[in-house]
Image 1: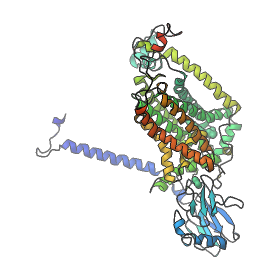
Image 2: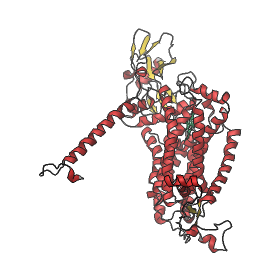
Image 3: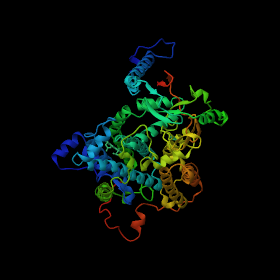
Image 4: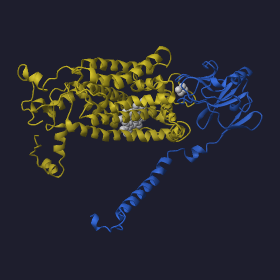
Length: 182
Length: 419
Ligand code: HEM
Ligand code: FES
């Protein structure tokens, strides 16, 4: 068969057929990729999921020392009206003791309001500590019962398998006692 | 090989155009020579096959009644239980069928481990089996999410979050898997689609598994190759009837659980509708995942825990190259036998450790058992292949029975002409 093809210039080692193989193969790969990509992308969050409105929360009724849970993008968000004792404990922790060092100041906009995504950074359980009487772990913050992660009063991981601190969602104070999350 | 013969005109007409009858005969019929000494341990392959069919049939019936939507899934399953004719039966068969599927497959795997069925020339057969195990696990995991109870939801959340341990891309991969920012409707829908699809992929891999099996035929309890026709008997009727008998016994146990203790192996929390804001105090996976869950939790580092868990199955892929002993069957390996029993105990300990909260003694037991699991495969087996002196092997499969006092009752009137 090969000898029926038009030969490439005699001095080059390549044939015209080699080039055609390569070009056709590359075209096939690009084409396959172009078809597979939309299929994979269709599994990513869709527009209406991304558009899920931000959540507005009125902080007025939350007494000092009280914690409430709201939902944002399907996940629980912890709002903690911290007591001065909790704040000073969070600010006092030595950064070198933290598995994921972050100062308390960097995690709050106003020290008395700690806003966190209430999803354990280990494997996604909701840590305990929101309700009175629940186990708050060894550092007085939250305790994840699934595999035993302890978070402190700044929501930072202190002990257990979780690798990082509870994340702080994007939020903004729109008034003295209202925030918008998202 | 006795060629397939038929006098039926229709069969002959079809056979000439598509030799399906001789194919069946060579696969599971009188044209398939099989070692004469297979024990009941060799029943579990066919049991697994039947269970797969049971799962597919009941699954399709359930799919006709089930609604894959976060607002309706739980209620649609309750409706199956209360209002659909025999819905309770179909669901209990499907639910417990998953457990029995794993019981059967785990016995099947330990059979292979003991009799060295993973050794040459059956490495590929063994590896295809491990692929089936992985597919089964994925299928069962996604099926368990469908009723959308508390354990469904939190199991899905924890297991999908395993992928967030992947460096750099982890978080993005998880969002992609979920189709959102948490386990939600998009997740339930895709799990349903995949739960429907994957059993059929399992069927395809089972076909490959059997193809590889039929290349050299079954291993056997003494692990030596057949030396001639006197070592083999036709699959049909000898093993068709033995498999059928085993199936009857299996169904007795299966029915006892389905009818008398259908929720024994399940978790009561899965009868509570999923609540994304509250994690049950103690989440546990289904029993068949417990040993792997224990390995995951034994290591206090997220990424390493996930790696260890996957490695515990991955290691089975390279097992044929870890155990270099030329003797297949554990019957002739005095030391291997002891370590095999220790491995079984180890897996049971892992199972218990996976069921308990990860603290105190059980955490330590889980950690020791995890370490031993890997030591067994990575250290003990390679060393045994060098240092163990196996007992002498019989010269043939037929020898132990044929030599000492005449023919075995029921032994083939007409041995296979050719092995
Ligand atoms: C490898 C085979 C299969 C396994 C191991 C398996 C496993 C499971 C499990 C563990 C559940 C949860 C049962 C419960 O707690 O209620 C489930 C549910 C379900 N499965 Fe399967 N399944 C298999 C095949 C199939 C197939 C082939 C279909 C459909 C064609 C199917 C359709 C369903 C449906 C609709 C449900 C939800 C109803 C329910 O929860 O009872 N399954 N499956
Ligand atoms: S999910 Fe919180 S410790 Fe594992």
